[in-house]
Amino acid sequence: MDLDDWSKPPPSSNVVAGAAVSSHVCANAGSSASSTAIGEPQNAPYRRKLEPLLKDILQDASWSEEDIELWRSFPWTKKVEVLSLDIDGTLANIEARIDHARGKFKDGSRAYWDELLRGDLYHMDSPIPEALACVKQWLAAKPLDSWRDAAKTFRTANAAVLEQARGTISADNQEEANAAADATKGKKKGKSHKGGKCKDGPVFVGKEPPAPRLVVYVSGRRDGTQHQTKEWLDKHGFPPGRIFHRCTGVNSYRWKANMLWDLRKVCYLRAHVGDRDDDRQAAEQVNVLGVQVNPNTWLTAAEIEYWKYGDVVLVASDQ
Image 1 (cartoon, helix red, strand yellow):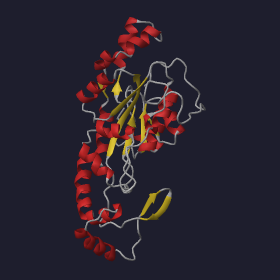
Image 2 (cartoon, rainbow, N blue to C red):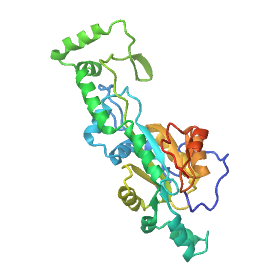
Image 3 (cartoon, one colour):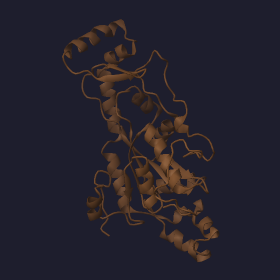
C-alpha cells in the first residue's frame, strides 16, 4: 500500500527503462542495475558476471561470499528466482496506524500522510499470518542450504570439466576430463555464449541444481525508514531480503515499474505481490506476474483459484 500518492497515473502510463528518476536510488541518476558488472578477465569466460544490484540482493538475503562465488561458478544455471513483495496492506496490517493518523489530522491532508508514514510508527502494524506463511512456504521449495550442498557436490563431480571449459585444466585432470567427454559422446551438448556467438558448451556429469529462491521488499514506504522496516520484518519472522523504499514525491506506479524492470534484468522475477491496482499494473507493464491481494486480509482459496495465482500464493485466508 502506497499512501502518499497525490496523483495516481492512469493504467496506460508509459514506463521506460532507464527513466530519469532512478528506480532504487534517490537521485536523478541511472540505476545501479545498469552499472558495470563485476566480471572476470577474458580468459575466464565460464564464470557468471555479477551485477552490483544483484550482489546487494544476494548479500541482504544472507548469502555469504562463499555462496556468491559458488553460484558464479555455474554460468549455465538459470537466474536466481526472486519474489517481490509490497509491505503495507500486503504483509502488514496497518489499520491501527491509519486510525492513529486519522485521530490526529484530517484524513488525506499532508500532515496526515506525514504522520502515517513515520518510520517510528511501524511497530503499530501487525503481520498478516497468511502472508508470512505463504512467503516461508514459497522459499522452502528451493532453500539456499539445499542448493549449497547440491552445488558443491555437482562442482566436485565436474571439477575437471569446468577446468577444461575455462582453459585452466591441469595435467592431472586432463585424463579425467577426456574420460568424461568419451562417456558422453553422442549425447546432446549444452550451449554457452561468448561474444554473442553460440557454440557447444561442456557436458556435465549429473544435473546442475536449480538456483535457490529469495525475496525482496519493494514498498512505497518513504526512503530513509528502511532500518525500521527491517526491524519490523525481523521481529515478526519474515525472511531477510533487500528493502527498496520510494523517495517522497516520486510517483508510485512509475517507481515500482522501473524498480521491477531493474530487478527483472538481473534475476528471474517470479512475481510482484501487492494490495493495490498499481502494484499489479506496474508488474504487468514490465511483463512480470502481478498478484493483487485484498488489503490487510490476503486472498481466499476461491480468489487464488480464480486468478490462477496458485504457483505463487500457496496459503489462503479463510476470510
